[in-house]
Length: 595
Image (cartoon, rainbow, N blue to C red; front, top):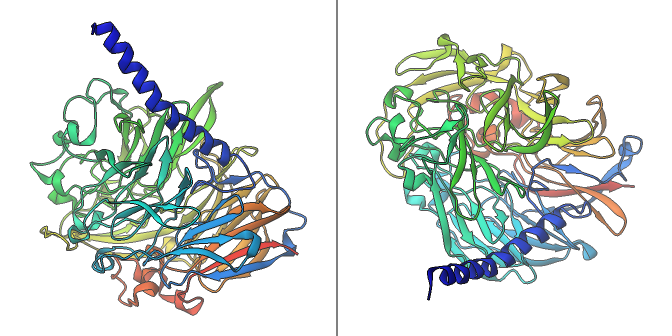
């Protein structure tokens, strides 16, 4: 066979193989644009968490009521959100990760329940509660991750296991709390365990069979991190990364315990065919033990979902000395920059800065403090992409550095932001907190904490405000309005075309607010605090808003674990010691509608 004929045959074979995957992606994207459903974890591939539904508006939101409720069957933090596909609702609880299918035509009927058998060791290595960020849907399957690092594809009609895969090993401190993202014929998942010396990675499994398609580590050799030195761009410099760009920034083999875990949210641009996500902190929390930039921890990546190869990478916090994980979501919108419309990515980082990047190449277009207390860095240099540090807030071994803002929990943690295409504003639940940080030497042992720091967290300005809900312009850096909350706003807001915003509070209030001002239009005190993310859907001509309630996560780790010492829970317990005066543990799905 001639070379040309062989090439034509190969191309024809590839076209046949790729066509169904593209069709599947187009179907899922189309379904996600139907406001009556909620078929992707963040509502859309772009991650804007915005609903086009308008039945609930600023004039009638005060007439909301609880339509129905359902127990999750678990007590630990409920961090995700339901999906609505047709007349079915699907959601996953915290550990032991029960998955439910509910018939919306017959509320109260559980069509099926999946209760996976799990490695009972996994809860002992879950750093920040036994949470889960929810399920995904595609091709008649419900995609599930469990704390003990299993990935399951379930038949959406019956709940029966189609395939399963093991993505990690709890004995090494690896766990999973993320919601999968399906792109083409790939199920994309990450890994948790940055406090156990876990080297983070993103993995793609075949949607049909569950076979491993590719895996991309966050740190290490180019072959492991799927970097092409001749093509992958360093977003900060806009230059090619060059060979072994990660290894050059670690001392000897420290990268093998390098952190960079991938437990946040993922988004996808169908036009550019790129998946976007962030990596977590480097290991250990003691920066003295790991000199260098520690690339590519605390980094935003753009990868080809079919191959895993990175198009670009932008590191936000080089040599992270504060545990400023970079896992927060990347929201995909269009922004007008110098009179030109640019496809952008907005990322509200744990470190207190919002980043506006050109999502085609990772170029930094803007960076602004979104919490006024941020003091570890003065600003982000737009030319170098690097932070201009405040030397007084740099942590180091055996020194207790005081009043660093934000605290390690971040000015915003995992709670996803919302973007309204009409107002062109982001609505963000934030943390208004600071910390004292003392690093110390630590040795690695598999399956044991690899932290190396003692922290104490407290409200910024030592006041009574630990959280803020803000309306923010990521192009100008302007905060249009802000609402103070007693505790961290650990629930991802939902905006709507009707100008109503929904969110929950750590002390248990579910609120509907006017997007124009933040004024509360309706509030209901839920059975437990809220760290889940509201969704909206329409069923039989009626709009509903659903949210998982159930306090927990790192924000409420003291309540979740029964801890009382202020420095316990990686320094977070002292921050919310009074939370037990307002709420208690317990998982409940609560669904609201108009009277």
